[in-house]
Length: 176
Ligand code: GTP
Ligand code: MG
Image (cartoon, rainbow, N blue to C red):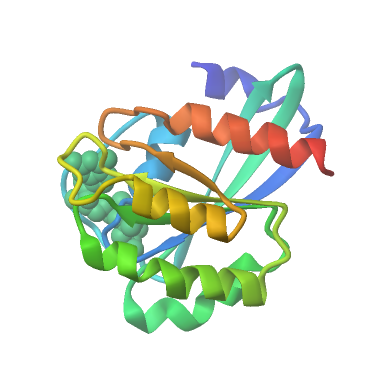
């Protein structure tokens, strides 16, 4: 597909993207949907972090997304600042069906602000194919207070995934 034909193309921009957020919110699933347009129902915890890349043409720019998919398990939290270093884009992910994953956003956003010099960050509510346990107003307000973007997506159906990477990619590029 598109991905294969672009593999040999040289990058005009390299963007380091980091996905952070609680365990099981769907960080790996978001990365896999974007990179290989696939989805797996079973849960396999990420250990430490995984690297995956994809090249995309966005508004005539060849952009190489270098994606670091971090682990949400408590024991790996201390590694997150290391992955945030030098990142252009951060996705701070929560699960729209898990209130706890939303409560944790404060901690993730504090970590982001302390340890990253990031061009663009977005609060991402994943699993929007399921019934949300909250009103979107809460996460929208939280994102606005921090000066961040906000989006809801579904890695399962693919809703908004490619669009979000493209929007964040072109915004980051315009500030490089
Ligand atoms: P850690 O690596 O442990 O931090 O988890 P993660 O954030 O990478 O979550 P992962 O992508 O492994 O997904 C966790 C579970 O949620 C898996 O069973 C996925 O199939 C499921 N899941 C992920 N995204 C969606 C979604 O958009 N909708 C639904 N219904 N399920 C999803
Ligand atoms: Mg994972």
